[in-house]
Image: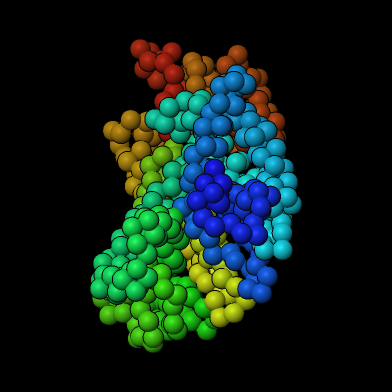
Amino acid sequence: MLALAGWIAAPHAGLGLTGVLRTAALLWLIGHHVGFALPGAGRIGMLPLGLVLLPGALLWRAGRWVVRTGGVTRLRHVGYAALALAVPYAMVAGALALASSSALATPSLPEAVVCPFLLALIAGGLGGARAIAPRSRLAGLLPDRIRSLTVGTVGALAVLVAVGALLAGGSLALHLREFRAVDATLAPGAVGAVLLLLAQLAYVPNAITWAISFTLGPGFAFGTGTVIAPTGSALGSLPAFPMLAALPSGVHSAVPPVLSLAVLIAPYLAGAVGGLLMARSAPVLALEAAPLRGFACGMLTGCVLGVAAAAAGGPLGNGRLSAVGPSGWQVGVVASLEVGVAAAATAGFANWLRLRAVDSPGAPGSVVPGSVAARSAPAGPATARPQTLSPVAGMAPPDLGPGDEADDGHTIYLDPWAGKTDQDHADSAAPATRGPSSLP
């Protein structure tokens, strides 16, 4: 509709209705982050991530409709509903890419299949999961391990996004004079100013992702042979786009040491928050399991940031601007290490404190030191007779009583004082441990 309205309102000599439909299909593909190639210019892949929010919101609603209409009641079946939505959606996008190819612009067919498929799978899956249960109960439906990893990863990403937004907004505020100068040079007029504002809002997610890459250390580039990082920046001439006024032009030394330290500490802070949330959302873990799960949160965070960094940049032709944005694999590797190490250390320390609280005397579920029955006796009436066994694997106790059980291939321990307990508590169940493991 927008392409048709523009064709009617503007001069359209040499462009027929077929060209209008091809242009509309190309704009629809660009909204799904599908790059295209222009004759004589090269490939255009630096696309605004904000445009993805519109089809993402519609696919989210479509996922909810599929789940409700299909009568899906279990969370594990939501993936099938999302897959049933994503496969035909990707087929339609591929068909539109083939139909919109012309001598003026050629969209990328692999991206036209992969990007809409992933967008429909993720957005439709999240919408379908939301239809199963409200947000407050949705995390409780996940298994303990997946829930703890998800909560920790989301917490780390939230901190990094907040820091990135603050850094990008602060840099633009410091260069407000340059921003106004570029806007005055363009002189877009009333309608053009609105369109330019919408274009800049669509590039806000790209700017936040670039700022996150800056805090991680690798930084980003805007052209071949350029770099913007905490250690220093070197830039050439920039296009006349007002948002780019936030980037320092020319060659600059590193930021002040205090500011550089504050910027570089943000990934470790995000990892600490993610590790703490992971430890709090998981049950009491073994001493060596919590750091491993914390590092897994860092790995997942790095994977998400690597994909976001690769999508936030791209070429603007085959010339000097063929390299724009951060490097996806560098951001992913560095984020996994920085966030993962901080999350592992924080999760291990938080879980150690919980273990101390559980094992402390008087705590609920604590184990009395020296009590063999509390560590090895199964729950139920204490009926073992006062006899002992040598702890040899595979030996069955002689003359088993009705309450004794033989466990082939395991070491069996009996409490020799089980029959000498207080008669008032002879039939009470042995206290169950709440720690990660209890070895005799």
